[in-house]
Image (cartoon, rainbow, N blue to C red; front, side):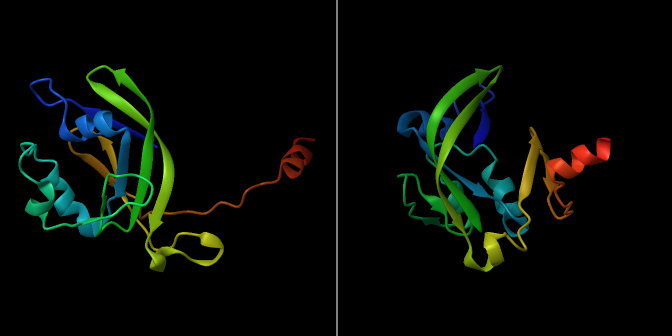
Length: 151
């Protein structure tokens, strides 16, 4: 899992970056439409002493493999251990090894396919997002069939 965290306007580290650097662990909670408004509020640049969770009326749940809590309301969360960090301009890339997945039971279908899950994706700073509701399935071609079609 790779996440990118920029600095505050004054150049200091954001709380999430400080927490990752201090603990070498983090949790990525996948945001869905029902959490979009809360996510936007939580990005408001709260001072370290004020909780985004309290402001958004959200709650934490215990993680299993890392100390950092996960978001109880998230339909999917990924517990990560920091593998490497890399400065990239004004941002830092945090590369984490995913050590535990949490997925709501109702989302898991046959053969462990995830059904009816449409997380919100962040495409760019400060406020560019996308919905993942437009899905398509393309049958995977076998290499020998592809090679045969070349002839």
